[in-house]
Image (cartoon, rainbow, N blue to C red):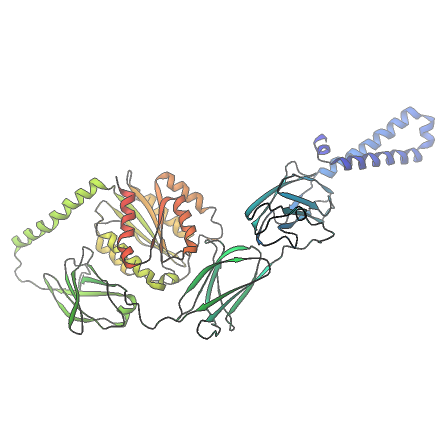
Length: 579
């Protein structure tokens, strides 16, 4: 009972004393004739009964009481001036018990002013706590105000966050009273996203729009027949927006939303009908029957009968033609030792769309192969890589790399997926037999393309990379979990164990990323780092990728061009595996 009494405020104790006196006087009136005949016994008895009733009320009043805050953390967004009361919010407090609850006090702070609609909360009813942030300087703020209740031994913390673009004067520091500004629910702001043609301002119907204030919670919608999408938002502040439509150039930008009406307008420019003149063409040469890659094959690119480019395929069977233009017609010649040459391969529309072509060579049948010559050739070809790999083994630790690759529909834009393919093929060349590679792709679903495999099987790994295609939504949480599972199963003690997330920046970690971040940190402590690669990622969403790489003890890099595709991924692995 003593614990319950301590929960009651001073004015409540006065009320209880008044109740006690009134009860005692009523009893005297009812039993007065007895009381005056035996004053000492009866009066003492009446006094005890009154005390029991009062303290019974006191103990019951504190029992089973429950306080519910409708929302204890609130983001105000940007507040531009103090004209309407400044940065304040009304927190709703509900008494869900059958007993009366009292608000004792709110802890004072130089940055806060607090008012109450009432300090008494009747059973089943609600009252309001108005908290105002006193802005002494412009910028972001977070205000925590502990509030004490009679029914609780610990305070409830109310949190107010936002950004002020003003400073309070002495006159504007006070929190508005409930008489001057009655309670109203937190204001929602209207958001209108409009997409129009930049040339004629015509509305663009079914334009795909994305917006978020958190890279892990992306909202995707379509514009209506008027080129608009509208909704109500409560959380204000900075948002990332992107608008795209087939046949138009994608636009993205950062906007600050505030109370009132927010209009975000996109004027999309039509795409040029031809492909960029500086796109790179990837040429792969393979065995027609075994599907094996052919290294050191001679490749010649011709236009109108004139040689434009010639080179030998690398160890992954690849040649990159850097000055390719899909608006022109090309013919390709390819030849290799022990294979019949291809003299006139013309690029198809499919090849031009992907900036990628595979040339198949048919092996020459030999009736009497010379065994001694074959042995000599094999010895010469194998001895050199062994020497190189021995040097590399002395410089770099063995690698256990798990690629988690975003192949959602956004990766099909701006040649992102082909840049990724080029980058991964370049990486395969120097990898050694002791290095391991695994491939996981995610869009709407998560799929393992290749379990942990020795880099000695370059053809197998390259084949999976070439087959990558984009399509679907982005769902990264399951992919991260699966990537860690593969990395852990193939863990190399003393090696570089690394999960590499490759995306265009719109990496959706799900509605609650609080479970993912601790997992990333935990695996980093176990020795499995996480790095992130943004392929032509918008700068405004790169912050989330940087944070994930930091949590994972890894690095964040961007790949924006064919030249960067050749070096950046390889440099990242070298840096992390260097002894």
